[in-house]
Image (cartoon, rainbow, N blue to C red):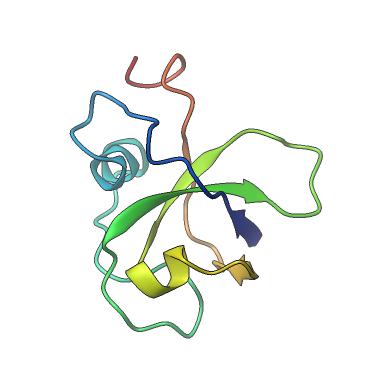
Length: 92
């Protein structure tokens, strides 16, 4: 799956302590490595992303390393599970 990292979302918060904790809670996975294909760095943040080439305009969370989180390029996250970032539908 191809996603686009959203910028300037650090003011958004949830009740899960952090966005990476949010992703782990709602996907029931452990965020060990960055979700970007061919990246072997450790996941450090739960990044807000949008699906590219999709009519789905919801925001989602995926674990990324610091470097990939700064990327302006489309990111191939393969089959990484997405966690809905809408706190009204999740932890809010």
